[in-house]
Image (cartoon, rainbow, N blue to C red; front, top):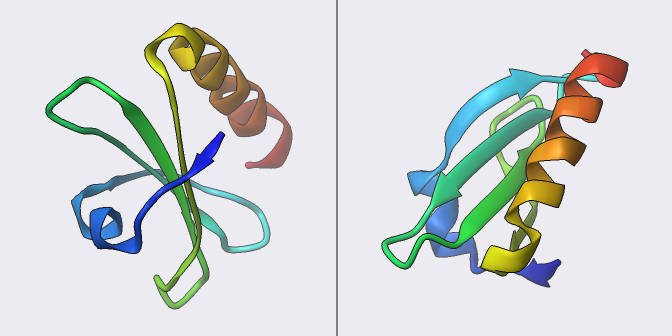
Length: 71
């Protein structure tokens, strides 16, 4: 993953909340690049990253596993 710019955090939509209160948010930019952000319990960004198109499926599979194992 490549670090995402914090300005894109506000565009991301929450998709799940982990057991520890961390929110997982995702966003796809106009170029179709998938981003994922983590927010603390107060909705402050703690991580942001994106993957190239070739890795989008792997990111989605990882998100599915995270949902299963940590929510």
